[in-house]
Amino acid sequence: GDSVTQTEGQVALSEEDFLTIHCNYSASGYPTLFWYVQYPGEGPQLLFRASRDKEKGSSRGFEATYDKGTTSFHLRKASVQESDSAVYYCALSPDSNYQLIWGSGTKLIIKP
Amino acid sequence: DPKIIQKPKYLVAVTGSEKILICEQYLGHNAMYWYRQSAKKPLEFMFSYSYQKLMDNQTASSRFQPQSSKKNHLDLQITALKPDDSATYFCASSQDSGQGSSGNTLYFGEGSRLIVV
Image (cartoon, rainbow over all chains, first blue to last red; front, side):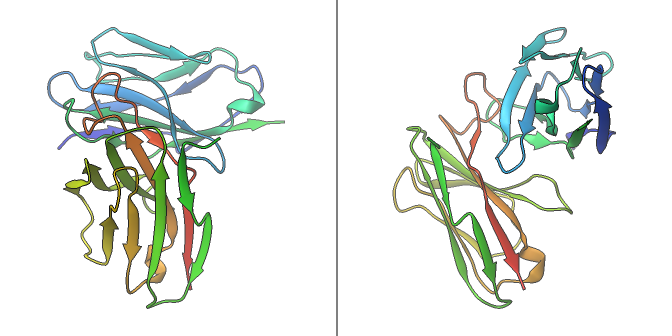
């Protein structure tokens, strides 16, 4: 079945470091891909989505490019800040009428 | 102001008891959902409703029963509580039931944290 894999359970960085959180998916056709962010004490909220090969999604300095060839949608940010501390979820929808399939989440910790 | 209100925010319950988690959304959305988040499963879809009708149920146990008295309400009744039910339960909503369609963003409430002792 369709699935999303986030390999890092936790990433610890210092402020101004470059961030990469890996997301690989398994699905047929062209699923829509999402990144959600969950801040402490809150529910997840949409960061951005992409629905076509090579489409780049971006928001708040974060970006990810839909890559059908490598079935990936890696999240990147050039310079992280303490306020970026959160859990990041990659998700996909195999069909516009389908519910989301979620990755296991990656906790981003910004070291003082 | 939060647009999706969940009550209570925190709840401690005794094993075997029954509790109801309340959810109201003021976004004018037609679809509502329940998700569960625990240490074992980071984010787990439970139910989806559209126009007050059950669309999808991914919860194996009948102890979990959603209840929709109004279009913008979707409560979750949990009976015969077990310690394994301890989790944060998130209510969510979207304009329509197609979570994957563009322009149909999923919005989450702040969650109800349930601890079963």
